[in-house]
Length: 105
Image (cartoon, rainbow, N blue to C red; front, side, top):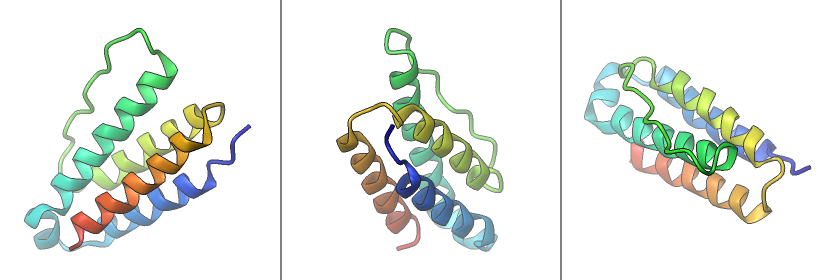
């Protein structure tokens, strides 16, 4: 079983920054970038869990909820990756780190 702690830590760091960010920062694009990242993580998890099904799009619950959405789908993906190749975990961690950097650039 693959240790997905690096992904959980990366997602938690990003989610915590979003939760503590001022509204102005969220409006300037951090929330949109985070929603895009959450949607991508959700699609990755769905493809691992049900490869034959069409992935559903994560709804936009608003800029103040996106940190929580990111945390939830990040954990869903971490659970799905426990039996996946380690390269998929490495790619997910890299993706989250890059999305966080773009959100708070």
